[in-house]
Length: 396
Image 1 (cartoon, rainbow, N blue to C red):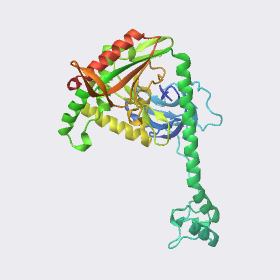
Image 2: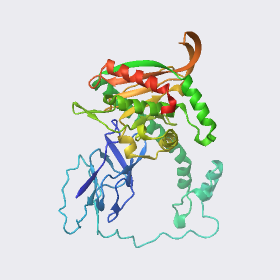
Image 3: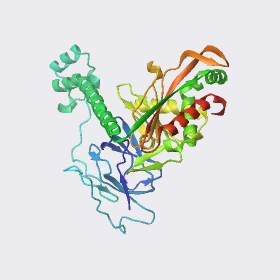
């Protein structure tokens, strides 16, 4: 028997609200398949299963808010059947009172009510005169209003609800933004409380990178042109392979290394707040693949359609506030990660090169790192290597 639990989708997540199931009892689940959609404080996230089996029970119902680690469903392993399996009695971490009973393989479907809703009458919908006047005053299309009166007639209360719906949606958006800010504040407070940060910075000349990028984009159409941000992401990932102590996690008092480099990209959401989902295996991807994947990730993050692996997998975070006009950004590490790399805006500055003073484009790269895992000397070598790698864009 496999237990499918609510995963942690970030250091600032303690619980999540199940929005809907994408499977039902009896369905076969493949590795990597999306099985549920869960709402966190930041976004609605598609939750994947990393085990294979047949859905036996759905132990949680849409609308329930549950703690991380709660068993949401059980799966039958190969060779198990509903008749032969020994049903576990998992201890749910503070499951809410009054939760609906589990839906099981072979369970009878719910009995439909004897009465069915009448079909709407042909022609113009029945509407009370007061409701019609109110709808006209507020520009409400009565065809879009659900009627709750006899034969689905539109009542005055129905129109009033239609008027109030956008106001409620705006209020909900404000509350969601406030919830996100609380979650971010809690995670960042934990980070500064638990992680002994150290900060370093390095000014990186970008003339060669800009010239290479200009030439490379001449061979691409507008939709596939590369951004400097992609060169920076690839350079960070390749440099982390040289300095692996900055890539991974600090959990239970010990460093846990990561062979792969999954870069969490800090993305500002339109409604406010910040989210940092992962681009996977950045060190192994071509620049064109990264550009396509980065554009897709930003679009889906802002549309609220991220996957659970993108929220839980980042091994390091890169934040770029160059478009915000700042010269440098000194970030706060996302626990349990052990480092964060930041880039400011690219701007012209005086630079001594080959015995001459000239104006060159440059960017300030910064490193925030965990002193429990590395020290300033190690971090300085990382930034120096990152600087040199950005001087050789053709190798990225």
